[in-house]
Length: 362
Ligand SMILES: NC(=O)c1ccc[n+]([C@@H]2O[C@H](COP(=O)([O-])OP(=O)(O)OC[C@H]3O[C@@H](n4cnc5c(N)ncnc54)[C@H](OP(=O)(O)O)[C@@H]3O)[C@@H](O)[C@H]2O)c1
Image (cartoon, rainbow, N blue to C red; front, side, top):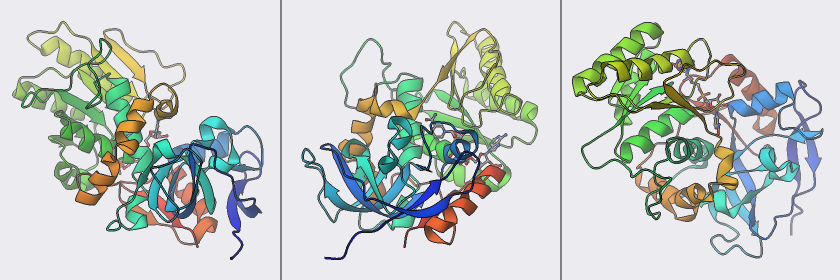
């Protein structure tokens, strides 16, 4: 049998470029799968970790949390997967500190709980961009806004999902981001209306994905007024807002205005709006009259395993990929295999537009 060689792109020290080395093939624990990666996606957090020593317990460090490939081996407790299965997964190394559980390498370990089968009809490249983005979108709705996970028991903490035809509005800044495009699709499939901002090149696609209203953010002040006018025309108060841009100057204050002005103009304005944000905003002074709520999708491995179970364990994600219910973020392949990851990270720093950068592992 051919020997397995694990090539890895490692960060030698904070702020340095990645280097390709050979590392031992990681060993899956009882609840894990070992994946031979075929396509790896790059996320903005990877670049932040590279530059700012964030969630890097020691060097050299492997980065990365999205992978797509074939199961090589499974842990003793895993029954849902077997060697040879095509899968997508989110890895948890950035939370638990283990290099073997980061995705920028040929072989990586992921929890079975955040792994899903990839249908044969979906190419690895296409499937590679969905895992972290949909896990975050689900965290926004179920952990941020505290709506009930479908199929779960009613509880005092969780609000019922919208009744048919009601369509509560979610105002979403940055609808063309990976998390934004998955939030549009997931939220509208669950009965919400999504009003979002994006540059004009993305408008038609976001409408096709389900957004009810899409406005340009070139003038954020004008975007606020357009979102409010659309809500007024629909006769609804905007009670939910999501910030995927998380910029204290360019996005967050404008979503605050959306919630606060919508409350003032609505006929019954007794309820405080919730603004979910997904990157830390150091020293941001929140206006009163709304509820800011930080969401970290990593909680899916800790407090909110029910969200992971609904997406991955239930087979929902596999079914949605098979029948095309959800369109993954658009993948753009950066050439060079693992060696292309540094170029991809450089491009992420400059900003990507409506796509996610991925590399193919030789
Ligand atoms: N907390 C968590 O669990 C979690 C999980 C995943 C990601 N995140 C964070 O969430 C953020 C989004 O991640 P992502 O992967 O979805 O990002 P992404 O896809 O790389 O975002 C790029 C998009 O942002 C849009 N954008 C940039 N500035 C904008 C502005 N001022 N207004 C509206 N849209 C703007 C761009 O639109 P145009 O093309 O129109 O310019 C572009 O399409 C990142 O900060 C990431 O670190 C957090």
